[in-house]
Image (spheres, rainbow, N blue to C red):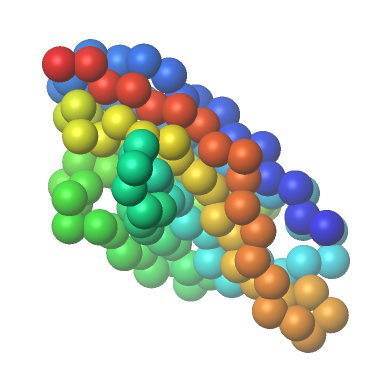
Length: 119
């Protein structure tokens, strides 16, 4: 089983910054991609950013130029640096990890961390 521990959420004013972290305990699990999703009240969970094992990244259009995803492979940790935050960024942010264990594709989710941006 893979456990994901998230940290870094909180309350910030518009224009401010936050950094989210997600550490994966991944014994016997080969991580292919690590990503951040978010879900606002009454809305679906959407991908914010993803970083693959080779280092390539993708971002939702709404966060391009403001958010940066990075990864420390030695620590199995993914980060999301969020700058120029807007009230519409308010959501629960979830860490997502995809990879293989025993030849089987697996996907795991963190418990979520609240990000609230006040206007």
